[in-house]
Length: 186
Image 1: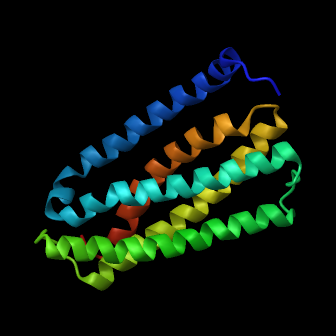
Image 2: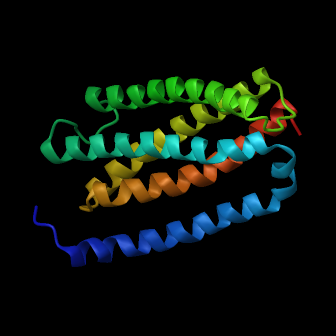
Image 3: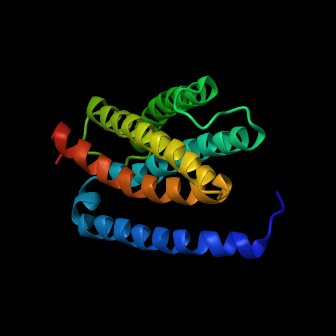
């Protein structure tokens, strides 16, 4: 496959434009909850971590799928064993990463005298719950985007990362607020 910057720009620009609009909407969600975030600074600290980890895991999964589809080691089917193993690995990586990060964020906030207004069990539960749900959703979206773009003749490497990052940032904020509400923190 010969890469052409013109083709990459032509196929990526509409997707990136939509991604920017969605990211702006996610920022508006945060803006609307500004008062709640001031009361719970530990949540504010958690948002970039929650979003970046899921985006990283989803992008890694998408890159692995794209490479596998290009070289033929992964078939365009949900029953492919390599695809399933990559998917499960992403979920396990998410569980481990979010468990460690939730504890570290809480300890760093505790040592830094950050006002928390939340107990360790509630906070760790919210971050791990958000992380696992987010990684699962992002992994499904990553698989779908890689398969769909490959089927349409588009390069999954150009499609997966923007989709995963945009959806992950938006879903991360929404899921974090939903789980905070479900646990009864605010």
